[in-house]
Amino acid sequence: VQAEGGKDNEAIITADRDARVTFVNRNAEQLTGWNRDNILGQPLANVLMTLYELSAADAAAQIRKVITTNTEQPVLQDEPQSGDLLKPLSDARGGCFGVALRISERAVRASLASLAQASNALRFVFDQLPMAVVLVDKQLKLLYINQLAERILRSHPGIELTRGQLRATGEEDQQQLAAVVQRASVRGGRQAPDEVTSELCTVRSSEDERRVILVATPVPTDGAVSVALLVFESPGYRPVSGQVLHQIYGLTRAEVTLVQA
Image 1 (tube, rainbow, N blue to C red):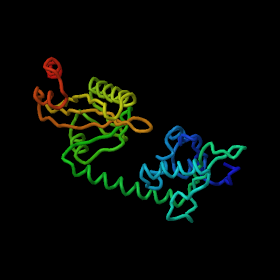
Image 2 (image 1 turned 90 degrees about the vertical axis):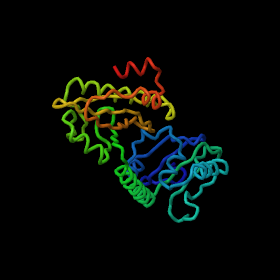
Image 3 (image 1 turned 120 degrees about the vertical axis):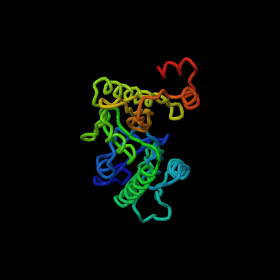
């Protein structure tokens, strides 16, 4: 990168000829807030799509053009003065063996503003849904909770929301909840996004017949796997309908009997 005109204070991400990230310098980490371990090996096109809101096709085309023509290109074609460049990495013979992305602070600020706006919009949408949704990591740390889920869980004596953690007050229920979330996290790391399966967990009230049913579903990402919990409040014990179990989860008659038991 230095040979291509890079400076010590520049934020640089490089990729090989297959357009997968091979290096992230400290300035790029500090500017974007990303950890290099999370993006090494990832497609450079994903970085362009995130920072510059390019389509997948445009991002791939930009990178391919730099590699095939061995010439630098501005990332934003309509803003060449922005300073964000894709530069070829050349060997001693002048052949291109990869590409370097030079990132400006302006691009990161714009990207963060856009992500914040999208995040706020999603929070508003999820808070309007008639469905209780919680997002946790494998240690049951709260990553997101919508208003309905918070109302249900804070009113249930079998659940605690303290210090950013979700916890069942009963030891047996807590062990079950932790195990369900751990298994979901493991499945999410092994299964393709369209193959993930869900699992039920029931938390009982120590004071009355109320129960909270949590449906745990892994949410695979490029980094760690999160777990989405759909929360259903039951005023008293009522066996889940066999027809519902069959229609939603495709269970056999024997499996329905086992779940109800």
